[in-house]
Length: 451
Image (cartoon, rainbow, N blue to C red; front, top):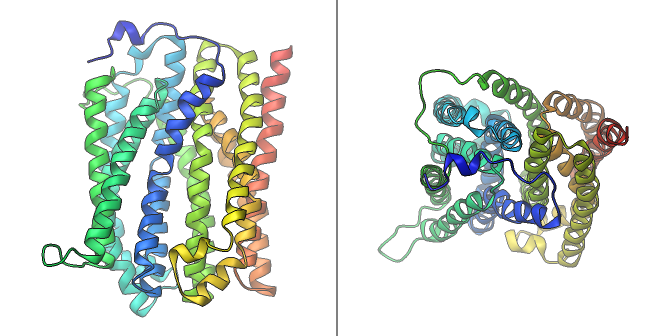
């Protein structure tokens, strides 16, 4: 191993400054936007084929990402466990935990590949997809879903990297995947003369799969070459596995609820017609892109909060919340300003269908104004995950979904159906997720630090 056990077991610095935050956040931004960039590139290229194909990528792609987010919660949980032991200087206690969790993720991904492809017809009928749209969804997903084990395995290793306060490795892996996807998207969708046939929708799926395999292999190489961990598990179960499984389960339930929100939004939009669901697809991909962009600072909060908690520095933990609570909304406001400038042109990047552009332009302002709120919510998500408060995050998401998103979306659907209701509900959903953790963090950690 390039990093010796003696080096990595040293007690790390117990304070932090803005450079520490940026050192973790900036690479995490690049890493976080890898999957949304792949989805955006797919959307942009496939949008040139036709509205049905664009809607299919939106539906099948959103289901793929939803499933990955539900299953990949060990990424955050392993980061919380490893970062805490990094803060204590006891990484040796979790050396066997990482490969055991890695193997579990790969097997879980393989199982869900078999399960979801077997029942893909029923799955996409739940999205109101029928006829040509249903068949297009199934064709795209049958290929893309083979990436489940590769994506879940790579994400687990990304969490281990973050736990030892390094997000640059994951960034390098994500960049490799994004480049591979971009190149292959163009070549496989549209073809290259007589050398490469034009595969259309399936070409986009094959490009995404190739990117996921690339990231998986690169993450394994970095783990074996540069970290104190390995991907080869031992038989004896690590004593911290129960703690990891408990946090992962809470995050699993939370993410099921989170993706129920996305599912209902897509289902409502699909019921309003292909042009509307295509516009929703574009808006959601932009929303997700900026969300993952902002989420880089949440990853920094995740890693640093776990380290500070492990070292017992509650006063520094409070300061971390205050610093990130100022930085993230400022970044969100900057993203919103850029989107506002691009308002007249954004939809045209993805489609030239007039009906789709009109539907998109009617709600893009809601995507814009939500950016600072989203940023604050994501930062507190990251901090509380680093602290291991997964049950609180689970309950908060349940409350935001049941008492925020659902009544607003259902009310608009009944009285004024359309995208405005869906995106108004999204905005309220994020507002609840921003305000509640801000108050809780201040009460539990900042007032405690003062005492």
